Image 1: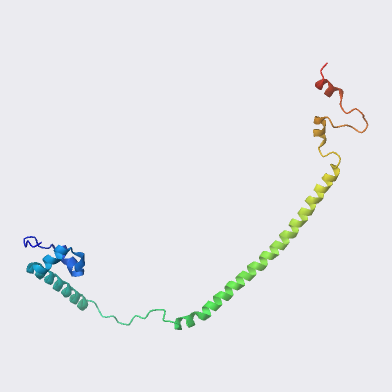
Image 2 (image 1 turned 90 degrees about the vertical axis):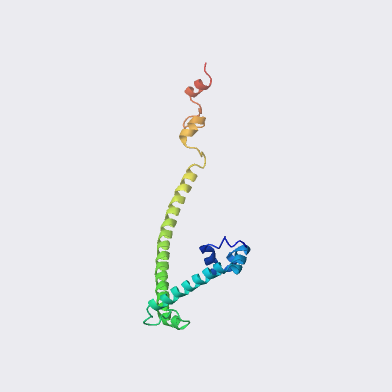
Length: 166
């Protein structure tokens, strides 16, 4: 960019103020060689300094010094009693909940055990009853195994006519 007709634009000069490495090598070389661009860069830098000085004058001074809330271990000592009280309350709540849970489990467990015993007894009674013929009577009639104790005939005449039509 040795052609002095093409000077740097304002945004390029501002980028040069912030960081010269943001410019390309040709733009940096032009800035070093061109007195007009250097003058414009100095004027922009002076305007920024004046703006900074003006802002320092206009901002009121703080009335009191700001102190951060946490300052090392001193703040931990201040919170220790509250922390201990909170832990105790949480432990008490857990203890009460735990004891009520076991009481309910004990009651529910004994009721559940009683129900299981009753169900088991019913099942055993049914098994003992069905020991000889495991199928209910209505299914025994379907397969032809059903017979009354007083009759020796296992198959009735209706069944035989169905199986062997004459």
